[in-house]
Image: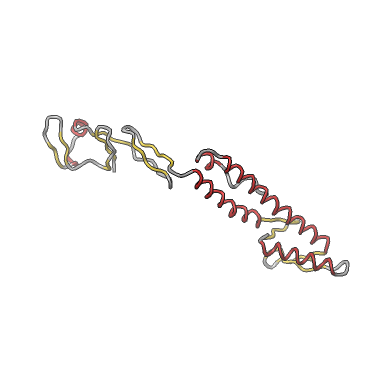
Length: 189
């Protein structure tokens, strides 16, 4: 469909069924209107309205479309900060140790600590089989388990450090556009 405005009024999708010409004559049936009759009745073609993101509104100023941000800054900040937790968790779980990809969820972190505590109580040289990914096992001794525990701790700490940087950027924002500009995908280890 084509949008039309009459004398700058809010555009309508398509022409009305009836138009009134300057001489007072009325024409009906839009399929028979000529372009001159449409213009004489005060109608002109308007570009299609732009897409309207959620939380925004469409505005017509008599000549052009625009969109305005209706989102409330504090609510937008809160929403974006809540998103950081999900992104941080994904980054935290994407962990590599010694070239091996290990899903570092909270359960794995606890098992690493438990295995390290257990190995420290065993005789020197004792190893434990460790499943680094589904169906893939490797033997870890106390030294390797200590290195894994430290690397896991450092990785998790780096994730929380980056989350704090992002939260600080969001809190420092003074406009919705500045909040939107904070990229939650950067800075993760």
